[in-house]
Structure formats: C-alpha cells, structure tokens
Image 1 (cartoon, rainbow, N blue to C red):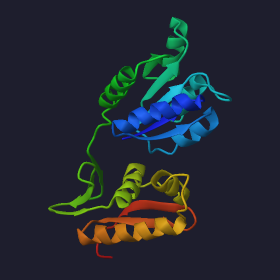
Image 2 (image 1 turned 120 degrees about the vertical axis):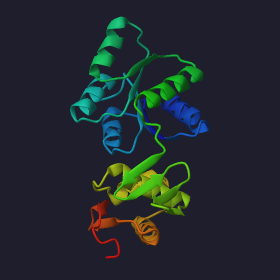
Image 3 (image 1 turned 180 degrees about the horizontal axis):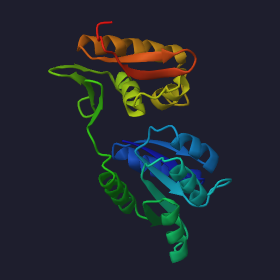
Image 4 (image 1 turned 60 degrees about the horizontal axis):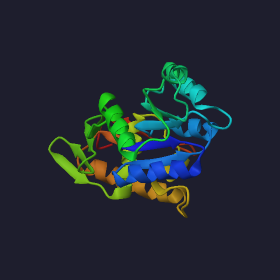
Length: 227
C-alpha cells in the first residue's frame, strides 16, 4: 500500500510518514497543494492524508479538484480546526474522514486501516489480460505458471498494472521506484522493463510491456502471446 501525505509542516509530515513506514506502508510527502495535486493525479496511491491549511491551494479546494477529476482514492483530512462547520466543509469537499490535530499515532493508524478496508483497497492481486500480479508473493501468475519478481521488478510491474493500460512516464517510474534522491537514470527503467518482458513470456502471458518513445510504458494484451 502506498500513501501520499500532503502537509506543509515538514516535521509533522515526516513524522506521519515514519509512523506509516513502521507499519509497512510506502509513503511519499508533498508540502504544498500544487505539488500534492500533481502527486495525487499519478494514480499510484491507495490513500491520501491531506492537511487543510496549505500554502497556495488549501485542502478543501484540493479535495474538490481531485473529486471533480474523478480521482476516488480515500482522503483522510487533517486540521487544527475542530468546529463542526469546518468538518462539514471537509466532508462536502470530498474527504472520507476528518482527524483533528493533535492526534495520537494509534488513532491515525486506526483511521488509515478503516479507510482502506472501507474502500476495498486491501486487495492482494492485480489483474491484466490473462495475468495476475500477486502482491503478497511478489510474483506474476498466468494459469498454473508463476515467476517471482525482484523488489524493483515488482515495484515497476505494480505501477504498470495499477495504470490499467494507461501510459506511465519514465520519470514517474524513476521517482516512484528509485526515489527522488537517486543516481538512477532512464536506462535503469529500460533494463528492468527488459527483465519483465522476459518473465512475462516465460509464463505464457498475453500481456506485453509496450513503449511509447519519449513518453513511457503501458501494458497491452497481445492476441498472439508468442509474437
């Protein structure tokens, strides 16, 4: 599970990320509304933790924008305001739950787990074509055949499966899999895509990883898997 935290108080954002990582969640942080919106639109997150008081675009407006674009990931809204009117505004803007600061780490985790359960996000298999990506076993499965993926192969494959056939830019794969503070370059993505293509063929999958020059990669179903 990957969670996006949008919070302008950097210490608090980093603390929330640390709490979530200790419980096995992958996390990213954005510290303003504009960059947070760009992250949220990538389509790779299972939950958004969103502060109300943000520079530029505030949390209410950001939630409204995301819902207007039919981005349906659960939103847990954070605020120092406890007035009923503010909570109602947050829920009307598209938030799924409202947590008032200061909050206990246990309360935060309980809200996160509840929202993921409610949204059905705690799945352990993603499917495309005749192939499944087993999130627990980190493996590709096609009928009775399966192949295990390395950690990086799995992260790249998960992004592509989650995109559902839509294009995923190389820059997105680099930032999500290798991180922002890395010496990895686009050639690293190409190498791992090559590994994944071989593994898909090895299990007889009808799924192919296709490239769009200078734009990125997407999944397609081939009618002739041996082609």
